[in-house]
Image (cartoon, rainbow, N blue to C red; front, side, top):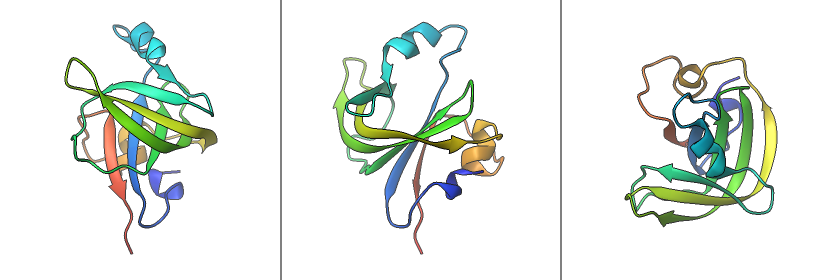
Length: 120
């Protein structure tokens, strides 16, 4: 399954690849990520300050679980990156695909986030 199995038309998504098992930053990523259904968050993302986001999709790299959540707000951190807050987080499925195939049909992707809006 790719990202297009999970998104709706005319909704602005940010898709985040989160790697809890990252050799250097795994512990820091765990401390700065909460997938709680009521008040989740993820930090620290390099996103445009004027970027409009309506939904958040999270791809957990270590087990390829896919979550969806309602975007609440973004908060700029001291390093210029943003902490993203969301709610109503739900596990929506699993994929067998790696990150770049899941979001980009295998085309090279150099970041851990992607913006998607499916217009018809």
